[in-house]
Structures are given as structure tokens and as C-alpha cells.
Amino acid sequence: MTPEEKYELFEKHCSQELSINEKVRLNKLIEEDDVVKEELRVYEELHLHLDASFNSEKELEALKNNLKEIGEPFFLKKETKEEVKKEIHQEINSGSKVIRMPSWVYVAAASIAVIIGSYFFSQNDPVYNDFAEIPRLSIVERGGQEENITNAEKAFNSQNYVVAEKYLSALLSKDKSNSEYQFYYGISLLEQDKYNKATQVFEKLHQGKSAYKHKAVWFEALNQLKQKKYNECVELLKILPKEAEDYNFAVKLINRLD
Image (cartoon, one colour):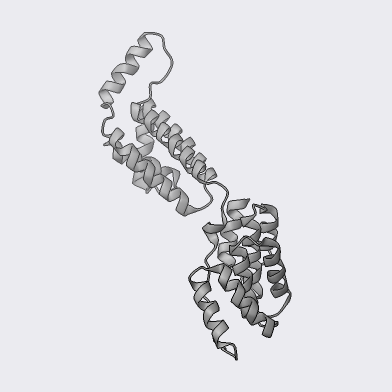
């Protein structure tokens, strides 16, 4: 059996995917070879640790694939079975009771430690830009403020939020109850780090019954995230109902913050 085939048996065993024939094959291996038995024990412990350390199947699968890519070159360098047995025999004769593990086991374990360390180091607290997807401003009902509307759209969509705030404010001065103007005005404020003013806008929208009711909650949560007020952010995210457009993003953000 090649090291790769053994690795595959270990993985299937831990994932409970072994066929009847594969179970018989693995049982025979560990009954006949204490080294393989110990290798499997180490592999099981590492597998359990990985399952307990990652929140999603996607994350775990990515890590396993990385580990396999790192580990395979070392599997190919593994000592032959006879070499391992010879070294075990020598250790037994010398009075040692320690079972010698093939070098690839230590390398694989070290690789996992490096990968896990790198993974968690990179999993810093989420930031605003990780989740903020700014929608384009395209005002359908033009009303009687064509120039202000055109200028507001141009400024907002080019991320010139200082100018966008100016024109959206002008639009609201003529139509204070327009929820679309309010929503994009709030985002313009948030993008300029005018947190308190943005909160006032989003809270007002949330209390209303417009199409921006849930969007306002999501962006107010991002407002809190941008200020690193994580508890406040989570509490707002929990308000979002499942039918909200940003519900799945909210769940993901909560998982990152918990």
C-alpha cells in the first residue's frame, strides 16, 4: 500500500465513508502493524481538532486540501515498511518502549499547526469593508429636481460622498419623507465616518415601513462595525428577519463576531 492510499483510508475512516472491504483492510493493517495503528490515532486526533476548529464545511475542506498538497511530497519520502520495522526492532532491543513514528507523521502534524496558526492569525475581527457593498444610486421618480438628482447620482456612484451628501440634502429639503433619498443620504454620511448623523437616518428608516426598512438595519449594523462596536453590531444583526435581503450576510458576520 502506498502512503497516499493509506492517507485516503485514514481520511475515509475519520469521515465514516469506508466501504466494508476498506474497513477490513484498515483493521488488518492496524492489527498487523503498531506503527500504522499509532499513525491512525494521531490522524484521528488531528481530524477531531480540525472539525472543532472550523465553522463551515467549506473552510474545513479548504484546509484539508491545503494539508494534502503540503503532505504529499513528504508521504513520497516515507521510509519503507521494512526500514521502519528494523528501527523499531533496534529500539526494542535497546530497551526503548517508544514507538517510532514515520517522519511524514511529524511533518504532517507540523504542517497542520502552521496552517491552523496562519488561518487563525488571518481571521482577525471583521471590518466594514469586508461586508459593505454600496448599491448604485438610480432614482426612478425624477420629480421636479432633475439637476439635483443627476448631480446626486453622479457624485454618489463615483464615490464622491461629500458632494453626494450635499445634493441628497438638497433633495430631502424638498421631499423629507422620501425614503430613497434618506437611505442614500445615510450611506453618504457613513462613508464619511459621520456616524451619529448616519445613525439618526437609519433609525428613522427602520422605524418606518418603506422598502428600505431592513436595509437601514443592515447599514446601521455596519455603522457600528466600522466603529468596532461589535456588541451593538450583533444586536442589530439579530433584528433582521430571514426574508431580509442581507440576512445571509448578517449570519456570516455574526459568526465572525461571536
